[in-house]
Length: 159
Image 1 (cartoon, helix red, strand yellow):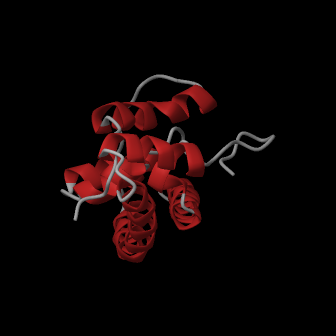
Image 2: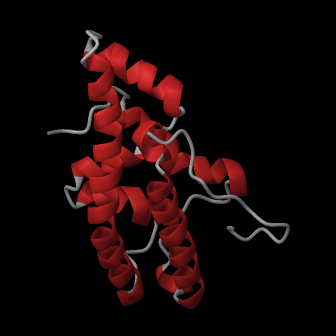
């Protein structure tokens, strides 16, 4: 069964791919590199971890929505009530999703420091590569996030 969400996936994608520039500032726009072998290994590990994370987060989320639907609420209303009860990030607010994003965002940033000439913005590796690879269920889950669960420390490093 598909993940029970009703957010606009295109808007979520647009928002998340541009949000880091709001935090770090927008220098001159450059095309992201194709990535190093390290980036591609990192993405493969991300996909493997995503299998379990998606299963747990989607099962938990869908069960909450279905529970409300059993009371007679239509799906859209059940989703809104579940968001009200569990937080605006919907299924992306599950702690394992937040862990996954933070783990691989920081690992991508570290790989970028090692392979600066082929740097890939973390948001590209975490979301755009999912979309390009046809991992639509995973992208749907991530685009429920209102923002990336990441910030900058006092030295301007992702944390």
